[in-house]
Image 1: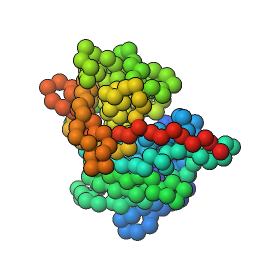
Image 2: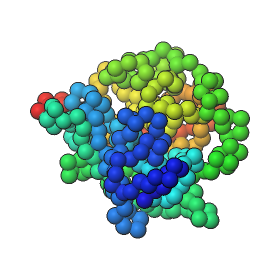
Image 3: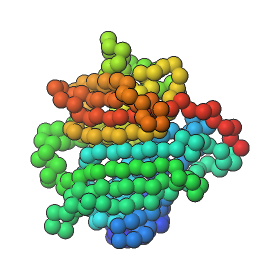
Amino acid sequence: MYRTDTGSTITAATTVPKELVHKRAADEVLLTGWEPTGPDTHRVTARWPRERADGGLYDPMLLVETVRQSFPLLSHAAFDVPIGHHLVWDRFSFALVPELLLVNHPADQDWDDVRLDVVCQDVVRRGNRVCALTLSYMISRAGEPLATAQTRFTVQAPAIYRRLRGERGDAAEMMARALPPGPSIRTARPDAATAQDIALSATDHPRRWQLRVDTSHPVYFDHPVDHVPGALLLDACRQAAQALCPPAPVLAVAMECVFTSYVELDEPCLVEAARLPRDPAGRDRIGVTLHQGPDSASCSTVVTVVPHPAAPTR
C-alpha cells in the first residue's frame, strides 16, 4: 500500500489518485489500478476514453501517456519515492500492433481497458532511496498483445534537482518566460482538432521545424513545469515523421528516444528529420533530432506505416 501525506492509504488494485501520476486534473488520469505480481513485477490497469480516438483509431500517444503515468505510480506506490521528487527520462521506446488501436467496441461504452505487465530492472539505490530504474512492459488490450515498451529514468530529490537546474528550476517562473507558440503547420498533424495539438512551426528548411510549445495544452501542461515535458518531445518526433511524408497520413508504430538534456521553455528548439533505411519488415524509418543551442537535446527513431482504414465502430 501507499500512504498519502494526509495519512490515508491506497491499496493495490484501486482507482489511482491523480497525485500518484503527477496530474492535477482527475479526468486526465488514465490508470485505474495497480497490484504487485512478484518481487520485481507489477500489473497496472488503465482505461482509454473513446473520445481520445480519431477516425476509429486510438492515438499512439495515448499509449505513451499511459506508460508515462505508470512510472510515477510505481515509483511512489512500489518504491516509496516521496511525492515531490523529480522523475527524469533517460530513454523511452515502444513498439505496437496497429490493428490493436482500432476502436470496435459498443458505441455506448465510453472506455476501453488496457493492461500493463511491468518488470522492474537495474534498480539503483542511494541508501534506502531508489535513484534510477528501468521498467519493461508487455501491454495488452482485450487479452491481445498490444505493445511492448521500455523506459529508463532517474529519481532526483528536490534539493538535488534545484542544484542541477539552478535559476531555471522554478516552474512558475519558467512558464512565465516560455516563448509564445509559433504558427502551426497542418501537415504535422492532419487529424488535429485544434492548433494546441500541433507541436511544429515551419522554418525556411523543408526538413526542419521549430518546436511549438503551447503551455495552455491541457495534457502536456496539466500543471506548471520548468522545462518542455518529455511526452511533448515524443509527440514532436512523431509529428516530424508525419510532416516529412505528406499528404498521406502515417501511424507511428515504434519509437526509440534518448533524452540527453532538458529542453528549455524560453529558448527556441529546432526539430530535424531525415529518412533512414527501412526496417527489416520494410517499414519506413525516420530519424529525428531536437537541437537547442549547439548540442542535441534528444534523438529519436520513428517507425511508421500507412494505417489501414478503420473498421466502423459497432
